[in-house]
Length: 175
Image 1 (tube, helix red, strand yellow):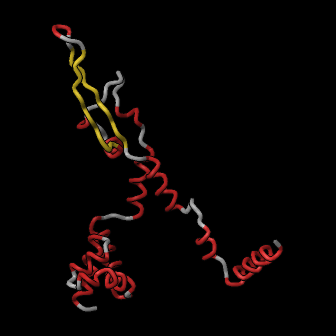
Image 2: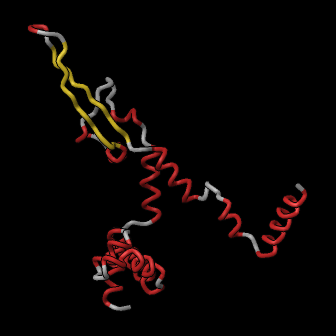
Image 3: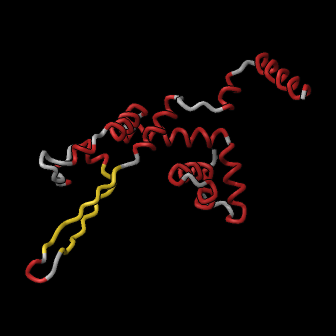
């Protein structure tokens, strides 16, 4: 692998964009798209990209187990834990790790109620939680809960696939 190819691999790991990575590696902007696509098919470059990613994951101590635990943490959190026994919102600085991880946004607005001497100030607090459905979906995909036709077909032996195709053709011809 030459210097430009190694630079392409390193840039691709950062951005995930083959065209931009080709430009940053010094390839012609006019042919960057096709060059980037060709580079992604090169076995040496694919291996370098995989190695860069594995190294980054090791250094960050990010594993599938870690990721699954984080996703499970988002799915399992109980929104009631954001409030004390009197129904008051617990300050963000006092939230435990699970609640803090589930918090996606917090908006506080000061609202005036009434007028003159009878005017009162009130705070409106809006909590936004992370998307539990997205976390569940990612866990489901990891566990293989979603089956697509292509994955089923890929698992069939050549003989089984031939039988399925013969059956399909005979049904189509019968119509």
